[in-house]
Image 1 (cartoon, one colour):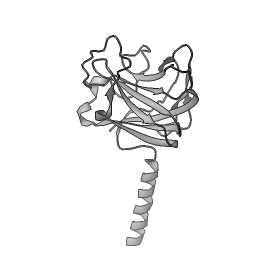
Image 2 (cartoon, helix red, strand yellow):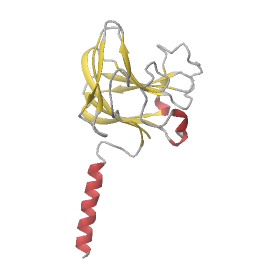
Image 3 (cartoon, rainbow, N blue to C red):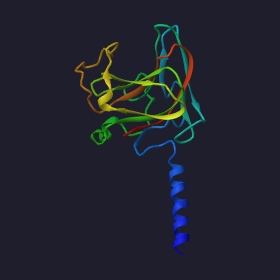
Image 4 (cartoon, rainbow, N blue to C red):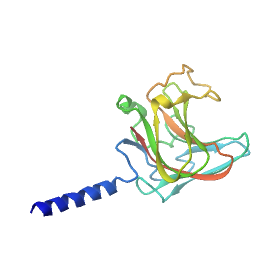
Length: 198
């Protein structure tokens, strides 16, 4: 009887572990379910660069992930954003509105990234004062892996800020939006999923 109970317990434990693969114990901010288009994602580039954003069935949370295909020109830029206060009004993350989140419970943001094993990705957040903060990710691993960005690791962007930013150089909550910005020149593709508060 004890042996049967132990075997059943172990089987249940293994199933629980496997069902959690690709996810951590955080609170979901976005997993990019539903329509992925210019109506639901705020993205763009300079005139010499190209960016396209699509849904991919290669996912870690739910049924799809966000895939960015790009061709970054020298001295160019790309961005792909979700959240509130963006030019695309329906580019909303899946979590509640920013002021409905108890940000004091969390120390950072994590996400799953399907990289190419080379290059750099900038992960930005816009704070309550409209100021942009940046966390740099070195893409050193091919395949899906988790990236964790502590709020104390973000640095205020010195290269560009919105004209409406308060400029106080303090990360003010609630955070309004997040964005990914590939920084590696040339053609590339990168996917994201499971954006969570940790």
